[in-house]
Image 1 (cartoon, rainbow, N blue to C red):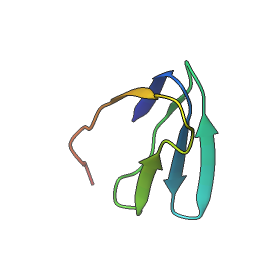
Image 2: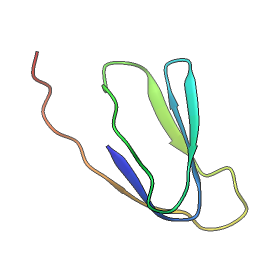
Image 3: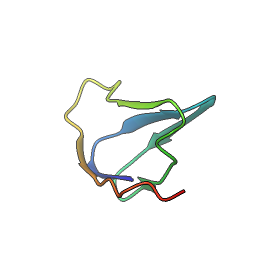
Length: 55
């Protein structure tokens, strides 16, 4: 899970690409390839959390 506190964040999860802004959150399954990136010139602050996988 990731929440954007300020700035903008590109979240890529498998083939899906989403740009999040302040106050936006995303949850995803970590077994799917994923990454985040700040593609802006400004500062981005995020809060991330990971929980144990339950199958």
